[in-house]
Image (cartoon, rainbow, N blue to C red):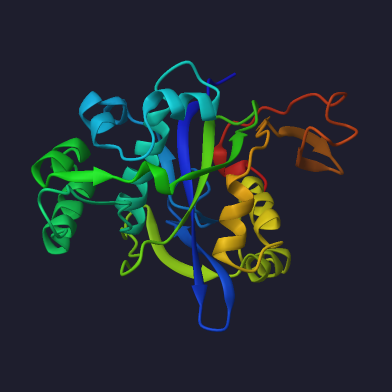
Length: 271
């Protein structure tokens, strides 16, 4: 069994003119081994650099003690928030932060030139934040859900889902590497298109959209997500069912009695 890697995902919310609540979804490069071609939320694994004390000191609104308590970990809970901010910037071009108060306005041109260098592996995220004297708005991230990839997958992630309103005056822009296109779409439309077979998504994405489809505005969604509630870790199971491999959730009657199927290739994961 493969040990899951820590990861973070961000569901960005927006409200279109007359179209109600929408979420940002990115299409993963079809050539990628893990869920290539699927529509996902921005995110990725927590890197060692996300645990930097310098980055911790740049976070506004949440410190490591509070972050760790929220996520139910002993320490370095803040690294999940930083990973969420970094991955959103890398993959979607959305920066949850601002210039330090003593510096004034954010230099957007310089920031996005640095994004190119970051995605090319030429500079570290910490270096960008230090050089441009930026703050990270961890307070904008609301903890939403916790999913762990099935034990039978050859690649596994222990992923914390966050939600956030898209910062004003920012426009999402894919990296044209891991992600090839983006779309703002209502949760209901995404689910309808998925069930019609034309909008590929993995189970945690589908289940997240099912929750969000209950709401009609950013304010309503964030108010619900901010309330005190239990957020359990959900680990689906891969099983042989009806002649193929299916994914069962813990509340399925066959979950406990079914043996886990171990896959050799992540491309075989059902969606």
